[in-house]
Image (cartoon, rainbow over all chains, first blue to last red; front, side, top):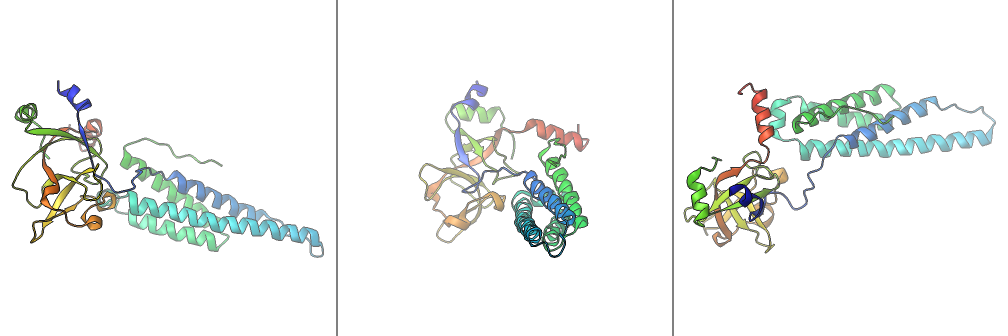
Length: 152
Length: 126
């Protein structure tokens, strides 16, 4: 009787904020960090044309500028997605289990800035490592076994 | 929150208590999204009670919040246990007692029994 009752005439009461989708996934930050890593590699691999070749020089400037502009944007997006996880998803009870959580997010946000400002393969890879750790902690808190993967 | 017993079920049949499904996580960890609780009309409400209340600005919405304080005019300050997930008196102010429909008294069903069992297992309690 009660099972039927539970499924039918049950009033619903809201216990949330005005706009909660409740959907979080570190994959958003991972995708942006992967882009940063690839862009950093592409910039480092870009060949500087011989001086005097104006056409090649213009093409080089154009490509480099585009890489830098996209890297700037992606770094901001990576930081944004990390901050959303940090401030909206993670709760004090998570911090009790993962005491290095604040440090992890703080350093990750700093790395986003470093990758934006520099052409540093080391920092881009370090950012990916940090986001992998965020991924592990996040899915542990969800009680789900979600393996880490990359798109590139 | 305590689990419902046979007396609570009788009170439901008699119409003295009714079931409410929790939607959202503002009352975590006490109440989780999907939990079903029993609510009862009571006269004596106090700070710390979880209450079912009508939203002051949205007629179709009822909400579950905890009484954080009662002001001199008898109005209730309602807050969610998880402030990051809650819209409450911080945004709509204190509400009159007439908006309180009942007090949450027990839990009829926990949404994530499997998860709870797993957590206990991890703590080596079972």
